[in-house]
Image 1 (tube, rainbow, N blue to C red):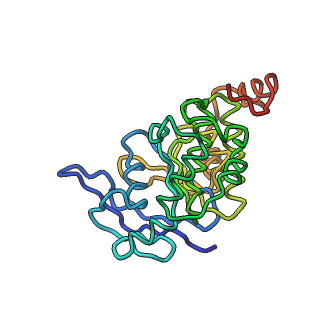
Image 2 (image 1 turned 90 degrees about the horizontal axis):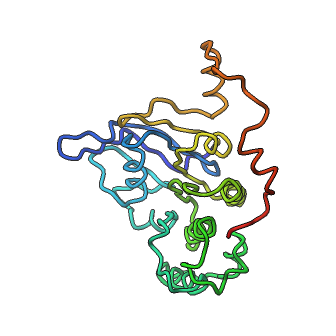
Length: 252
């Protein structure tokens, strides 16, 4: 597998506080990689450093063969970072927003094709403020693709969404990956990480405490003799909800 992101001995200090404590990991080209951890674990700081949004204290970061120290501007050209939905002009239509971002990136962009990819073709002339929560998140992901990045970063993309919108977003993320884009994702939903991620790094108190595939992590835990206090069922309550209400796009 080709390494697309390499992080070695990354440290970030804020005064006397050590937020990231010398972590090292690699992300492989074409995978969905999850960075998980409780609030304050250091995962957001780590991603912001890789995204060139925050200065590191020490360590080495290589993205697509480029050093963060020497080529941060070139790194910005090959990554896409999801904005929070509050970062858009609410009065502009989706087509106008895509054209605006295309101009900022100095990229020729086809708004219709991009909206089709995220199932928003019928909302092309709608203003951003008129979209539902799920639609706003899908559009937010679409904007990460405007500069045709090799890597996109998604920060808790399904927070606050209903189960249907959440599953639809999973499908979109898988589709983006299938077209060759590497996806880095943070989430507090463990079922989401288990379903989507090829590999996961779990952080706590500034350190990576585990890094492997979800299946391997679960198998390792079971091998210790761990048992759930409640019998595992063949389906979840979310599966029941989706089965009863349908999985088609319904973004009221």
